Amino acid sequence: MTTNSLGPQVSADDRAAVAALPERVVQAWAANDADTFAGLFTPDGTMILPGVTRKGRDDIRDFMAQGFAGPYKGTRVTGQPFDIRFLGPDVALLLTEGGVLAPGETEVAAERAIRASWLLVRTPNGWQLTAYQNSPRDAR
Image (cartoon, rainbow, N blue to C red; front, top):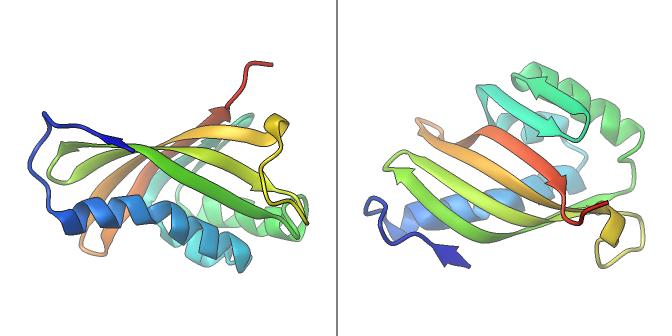
């Protein structure tokens, strides 16, 4: 994983907390827990997926609850950080690669593989997502 060397000095704890956020998403998804998933975002956070834009925790929670009851039922998600950049002491950009795993899959199918940008901010509740966006990994 690459990291920036010109950004602000950050603690190992902050770097670890930012790098751990994708695992927290994985856990919320595995539990089909839309409340926990949405709680990873700031109150006015934004989630952009291909063809989908959701703003605010309530909108994100409702979208994920519908997904867990419908098209995401029985799926898992994965995402591995490949770059972390601290844009300031309280702002970080995390880049990941992963995607949705269909039931029984151990690797993301190429047609569902994504790369994602996560913009995180330090809040009184720890590091939270203020913006998330993903795109297909491969050109179609």
